[in-house]
Image (cartoon, rainbow, N blue to C red; front, side, top):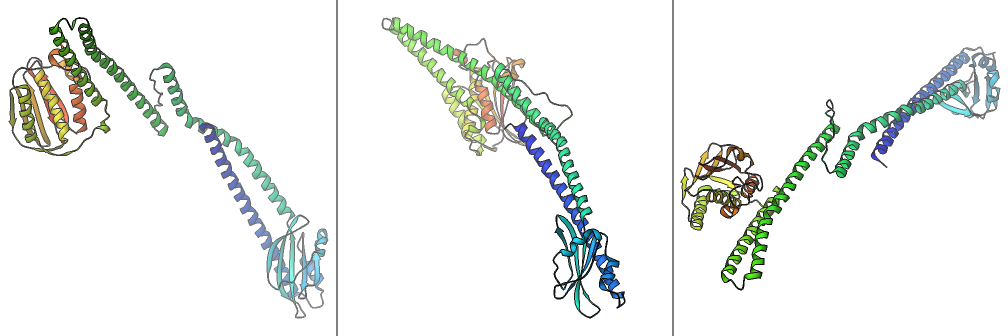
Amino acid sequence: MKLRHRVNLYTAAMFIVLLIIINVSIYSVFRSTMLNSELERTAGEALHAIDGLNKAEGNLSLELVLRSYVPVNGMLQIVKADGNPGAAAADPNLLSLHHLPVDFYQKEVREIREHNGTPYAFVSIPIILNNGGMADLQATGNLAQTAEMLRSLRLVLILVTVLATIPVLLSSALLSNFIIRPIASMINTMKEIRESGQFKRIPLPKKSKDELYQMAETFNKMMHLLEVNYEKQGQFISNASHELKTPLTVIESYASLLKRRGRQQPELFDEAVEAIHSEAIRMRDLTQQLLQLAKHEDQWQVTMENVNLASITEALVSSFQKAYNRSIELNIQDRPVVRTDQQMFRQLFYILMDNARKYSEDVITVNIKTFSDGAVIEIADRGIGIPADDLEKIFDRFYRVDKARTRKKTGGFGLGLSLAKEIGEAMDADIQIESVESEGTTARIIFPGTTSY
């Protein structure tokens, strides 16, 4: 069953059941009130008759006295202590009541009885006869008119329930349509996206801010996020294919050359093996960087600990100097202890130092500073710098500022800063780049406590 039909059915059923409960309650309360009122009236007539019996002269017969006080549409009956009927008087239209069986109760009784399908109010009150004997005066009142009124009320309530069902069904249908409309719109939009391959949005009402509006708004935001990610994925795949294509072409070309002339020309063999080995290493590095960038933030294995920033930087600078034989100037103004992941910091520091090495030939400067809210480490070079128009794009994957420069010289794929940004976010550090073209670049790692330096 569709959600629309279920909402319609459950809503209508709930309202109808509630309406039936209300009408049944009204009928029950009204019936109880009316029957109790009739019992009180019959009891009052019985007491009035008893008062008349007490005031009657001794020479008057009980039947004559009772006839004087007999109620309209009712009967008065004396029941002796032995259970036998005594004097009685009844409305001429209710003489059949004389044939009803009688009982001696010796206590006051009030109840509704039924005879031949007609309800009666029955009251029995103990009395003392003039001769000193015990007896019951029993009054019976015909409730045919009351039963007819209750029957009419019952029919009216049933009719009201049936008539009220129509607007209930219509309102439940409108309610289900109102609730399902955004969901149906979302389903149709998804179908259109699947068929057309284009990302679409659900139109949002301007006035409404309810949960349905929030659901549609969330859907539109999700579509926007999917669209952006889809575009980035397409660009990423295109760029990755382009980057892998070059080393594969080089490897294939040198392999073909070796196959044709490698045995006759030993110098060609060495050159080809070196080129193939170099391109294989580049492919391995590119693949490793791609795999790291493909990780979701939650997949990074981060171990936060207190790290002496100056001590670990001194060790990294010393190692980098020995590996690349470069001049590095280290300035330590403070020796702060920061909370970070030591291994991830090493990797981040290496990426930024490697960029400084690639794009400058002069001395590299490393500064460690503290400020009111945290600490910062700066890596500055005096190299070619970055044009102002390119600064916003340097963290994009495969983006290289020096497009005219060959990868053979820089050794990069345009993934280093993108990976650095990912690592910085994973270890709660902010990465900032400042650069002036032809003057140099300064990269900053800012540890928690500030968003700018």
